[in-house]
Amino acid sequence: MSIVRAAGGVVTRPSGDQLEVLLVHRPRYDDWTFPKGKVDPGEPDEAAAQREVLEETGLRCALERELASTHYVDSKQRPKVVRYWLMRVIDGAFVPNREVDETVWLAGERALTRLSYEHDRDVLRDAIALESLDGLEGTDVGSSDAGSSADVTARGE
Image (cartoon, rainbow, N blue to C red; front, side, top):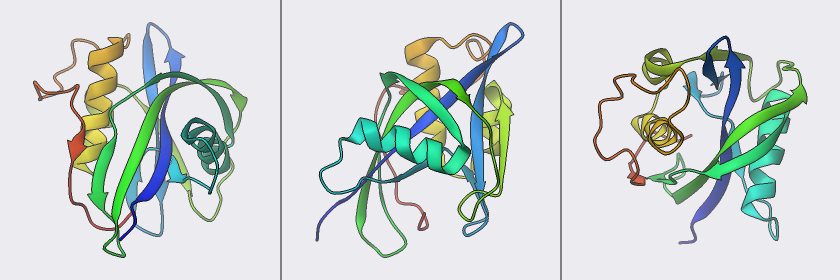
């Protein structure tokens, strides 16, 4: 069975003296997660991450740094690997669409609490550990292995 490749972003923006993280709500799964999607054949993962963030959120973003990848089984029982990058907003604005009906900007513990999947919380912890994100550093993120890849089985997303 082939592995499903996907890519996405932990999108940040400044808010006062801290950074906030963008989460997306997907009505199909009724979950809160990071923008991400499948890599097209022949497409570099980095380009796929930027494309998916733009398609789902309307935001054009710059890649900053690669974060932990997640590994899980999707809704069709296929192994899936998602590569993530820390991203900064360049421009754009969210318009609800068929994949994402709502977005929210949150910092630290609030973002960790809102995320639906533990493997997403692991990615956010990785971002906090690697980047010491202003406004996120010092937040109780609850895991000492924040820099490791998550290997989680989740309901299909």
